[in-house]
Amino acid sequence: MCGITKVYPNGVVANRNINLNVEKGEIHALLGENGAGKSTLMKILYGIERADAGKIFLEGKEVHIASPLDAIRLKIGMVHQEFMLIPSLSVAENCVLGIEPRRGLSIDRSKAIELTERFGAEFGLPVSHNEIVAELPVGMRQRVEILKVLLRGAELLILDEPTAVLTPLETEELFAALKTLVTRGKTIIFVTHKLKEVKQLADRFTVLRDGSNVGNGLVSEVSEAELVRMMVGRAIEVDVYKKRTTKPGAEVLTVKGVFYIRDGRNVLQNVSFKVRSGEIVAIAGVEGNGQAELVDILVGLRKATRGKIFLNDKEYTNAPPKEIRSQGVACIPADRIGRGVAMRASIEENLIADRYFKREFSRWWGLNKKAIREHAKNLMHVFAIRAIAPSTLVGSLSGGNIQRVVVARELSAGPQLLIADQPTRGLDVAATKFVRQRLIDERDRGAAILLVSTDLEEIMQLADRIIVMYKGSIVAHFADIESVTPELLGQYMLGVERQSEKEAEGAWNC
Image 1: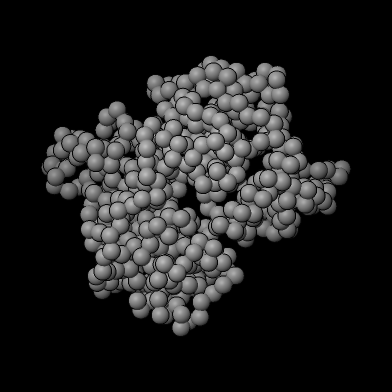
Image 2 (image 1 turned 90 degrees about the horizontal axis):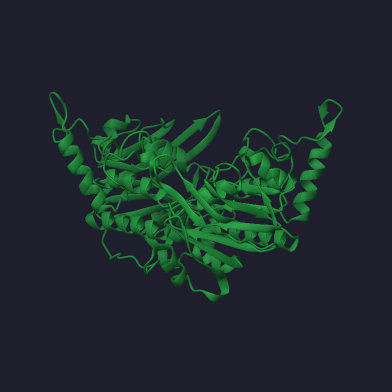
């Protein structure tokens, strides 16, 4: 890709004269902060966006990619961070969707199965062809996404944050599969924020900052610290957090025997735990094991089928969201776009969305716009939200800045209980460090924090206690964090291990 420039109608320059050179048969890491231009560049390569200037060459010949169909015809495939599968269909049906082999007027199902199994075996991506996608663990769903791309003849694969929701074991299996793909002649562009994975997997790298090239070369010739310096323009201690030892206080959240039944199935089964002031309790688990439903119940967006929930010893089971928030509960949702913000509203509007009716922002004749603006300016400074003005529409911000808006609103309320659901997913190094340190600061202030994360590194760095969920049940409690490893957690997350009732009860009472 040569001289790629993309300017959006609002004047934002997403890509500025970017060059990207990827060699055949390599794994090439594309790095940069949120808003650096990585996603736009890959959307241009896959035909989702059109460049305003620049050229794309494939195997030495200039190509014009106006749509994903053009990209697929040119043997370019993309595996998005958010999977594009049909949950109710089988693995084989998803793999051949849109390119179904035919026998007369009907679909040749046996051929579809044969293709799925053959490609899975050839590229080290075995998966049962008749499994319904909705019932597969996340790691298996990702295999299906990659198989789907390979079945369409992709020679160049773009993988966007492929390990964001995987356990350590699933990540190892994915990396083994990617190395197999390369030995079979495939080429991979690996978009990620995880520098350890870059060092482990990639051959070469390209770094973008503020929409421009700032570095490229062999991964073997740079350190993680040098990559960070290229990405953010300064040195950052990535894994250093100011976390002091505290003694937990009184119980703030108590969950007792919660069940949630949907379509006759126990999504949550007898879930019980507590979170005290001044501690971070982390829930680890592969996505889709009941964590999302549990969070929804805790914030009032779903109703528990059975069980009780207490806030400061007062029962709030199935209370409405506004009542729960009025008791000092804040939530950083996993879906920052769908649930965390109103994309068509401004930064200042989003920052008062839960408190516009309070006296400091409201008058009998309407909103106090001056107070709202000053409030927004202050939070934009404290939480380093990069935008021209408080009136900037949230939809024009990068993912990292959108997350900062959500974090600013939720933490500025001074919550007693903070529920942080995947708070750093998809964030760059600097934004991740910022959010994690803010969670620690809130804990040290005395807040009770329930952290839900699929990132085991994040859990190990932040948690005071760890709970593991598998198929809607709590299968392990760990109070002694020093004795826990990511590999051990991964075994419980995949259902390979399960604590006895006595072991779980011992951690519960710590």
